[in-house]
Length: 160
Ligand code: THU
Image 1: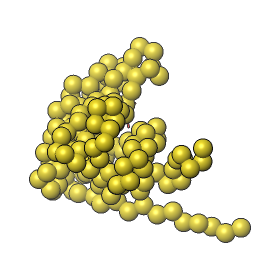
Image 2: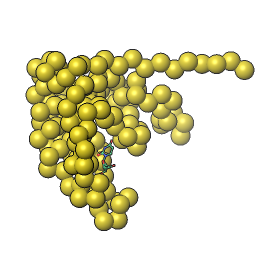
Image 3: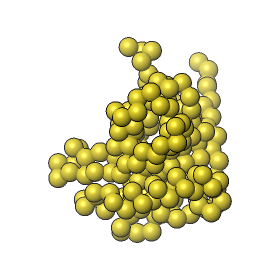
């Protein structure tokens, strides 16, 4: 038996104001779409803004359902829209933010496991890393250079 070590390196910005200008703009769009989320059950609003290589920005937010599992996260709402409408245009970066209507969320909120798996598919397909920035309502912003950096041991089509 031997051990393997899996390492992820993340960059942490102290606040929104510390982000590069272009990412502030993207995060601002994510905040605006977050506030239009349909999340009456969890009261947890999530926004996703995807910057495509051609400069276009694709937005998504979480859409809940009385039949809970039928709802969809913000990240997948956005990335499936990008995949459906701009299948040939690479995604350069994603800005994600979350907000709870029940308490002040100051912890940077990463994409859930199912969304990481979904984003991984597109990162592998385009063979170019997607930079991911995520934050809560306020506070620190975390950057991951790629999705792969957030999802060790990706299940990909090489196993099929
Ligand atoms: N949610 C997202 O939109 N993205 C995530 O990565 C985590 C969770 C949504 C799903 C649900 O509508 C609410 O947040 C609470 O889980």
